[in-house]
Figure 1 (cartoon, helix red, strand yellow):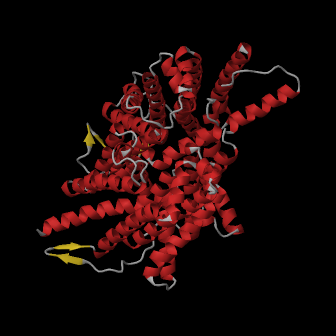
Figure 2 (spheres, chains in turn yellow, green; figure 1 turned 180 degrees about the vertical axis):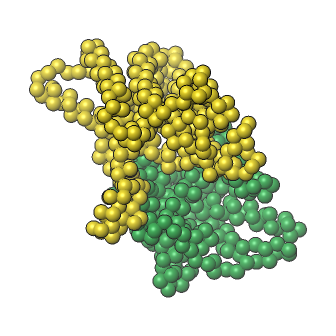
Figure 3 (cartoon, chains in turn red, orange; figure 1 turned 180 degrees about the horizontal axis):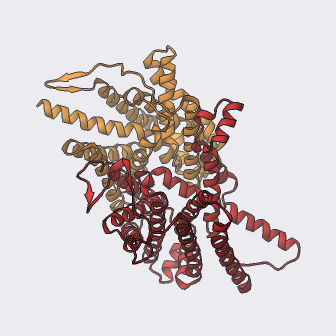
Amino acid sequence: MITTRRAQLILATVAGLAFMLITPLAVDLFTLLNLTIYVILAILALSLGLIWGYGGILCFGQAAFYGLGAYTYAVSAINIGESTAPLLLAIALPAAFAALLGWFMFYGRLSDVYMGVITLAVTLILFKLINATAGDQYVIGIARLNGFNGMHGVPPLNIPGNASAILLPDGLFYVCVACLLLIYLGLRWLLASHFGRVIIAIRENEQRAELLGYDVRWYKTVLFALGGAIAGLAGALFVNWGGYADPGLFSLFQSAQIIIWVIVGGLGTLLGPIVGAVLIHYLTSLIGSPELVSLLSNLLGIGRNLDSNLLLGVILVLFVLLVPRGVVPGVQHLWQRYRIKSGAEKSGDNY
Amino acid sequence: MDLAVFILLEIIYAIAGLVLISLGLAVVFGMMRVINLAHGEFLMLGGYAAIVSTQAGLNIWLAMLIVAPLTVGLVGLIVERLIIRFLYGRILDTMLATWGLSLCLVGLVTLIFGNTTTGISTPIPALQIGQFQVVGYNLFIIAVAAVMLAGLYALLRFTDWGLIARAAMQNADMSDALGINPSRVYMLTFTFGAALTGLAGGVLAPLTGIVPSIGATYIAKAFITVISGGVAIATGTLSAALSFGLVERITTLLSSPVLGEVALLIAAVLLLRFLPRGITGRFFRGRL
């Protein structure tokens, strides 16, 4: 069992490194830029995959931390000019905010639906406030918040300490894949540690964990803050990728998407959210593509108004009804059954 | 004096608006522990039903008060049979499935009607109170909300149907043993909740106009009102709507609409922190 897990780890590391090093040589710059956004969204999906899949905390407002990270980076990068401190701030501030919110919820012992309402309400508050900052008076330092118009012209990442050595798109790709890989490996380590095992115990039976002497509230708050930090990092990377931050990052639709990625990919795995994010984002970009729209409008005369909502909605309903465990656990399950049938030994833990 | 009447009307209107958009959701949540996140889209469908049938030449009152609830009730029936009934008792799964349904409905309606605003004019002229002008239609909204709330309370409290529905909600197995088919009760309850929502959507349509994505502006408020209200359907919705409507409108009058909405949300967050089971989880226990 240990060897299987070690083999998995090595496989994941090698695959990640190979993807990071080979892709920029194999594809052109445009494709590379497109791939970068997949990687960023995968990081975002991991943040919810961690707190929902392992901590059992369904957060309806993961987009709040994503947007907060994006805006923190944008505001501080415009003010400071050099990108190292803003990047760290974009991780620290959402983490602190998540810790505060977590403290507020978990120490109040709120259960699932009520927690959903609070995270939803907080996200809406941020969305509405940021949306309403369009006037000249809403300035932080020298950065105008611009309300619903969004903030543009945000300085990209640079090599730490040297503000003139900015990262080119291929550099950003390396950084994003490295972040994803490090977070994935870090989370695997975390989940195998004492902390991770307590977290999983809490997910399985909160009362029992409490009776065994663990302070459930503290563990959940820390986990929630960690999820916030990862989502904040994804937000900062997104600003680097697009060069802008707008209130849409905080929107309900964004939160919904993250939840869909995780449930499609598979709850309780780390690979699942990554797979889900890539799969769903690919499908939604496919539906918006001009070729498909013209094809559909020629065939059926409906392409004009086709939007990604319809597809996302159908996918979500079908998955909840038919594949509630998600793609990755489903495939793992089939694989194990196949191996048992073919006489191989049964493999234990799956991550 | 005029100002006082004007402000009072504004506050009552804010409360009535909250009652209107949440009552259908409250029926479904209170009775069946199902959170229907496609609720906003049910309101939107009610609006479209009213507007389309008015534009087709039907009397506007008939369109709003009859066609809209019937259409959305039918949609609710189909949705319950196809999706919801497989997910009873799994509250999070129901939320996710209905969230998917909501995206689906937005996509479908966009496909049919396009992403443009349509509307009809309100059938009631403006009203003069001293030097202030009040939208006359607001009074109609207040009346509809009051009738819906009172009607629902009476239905649950005084009729056989209400008694059976409450029995099935309190103890499904026991009522099953007594010869009531809970599955049928759930089906009818969901349909009824959807019809109430359709009525609300139809009545609100002339005021707001309709776009396919309008549901998103309602769902969060309705969801928050219902959960903060707690388990009691009528009392919970009314008490939550009272608190939030008051907070929202007073803040709006003192500052801006955006801050009004933010104040509503902050009030909800604080309320749930200190009353984790909603208002009626603590006060008015045992009411409907």
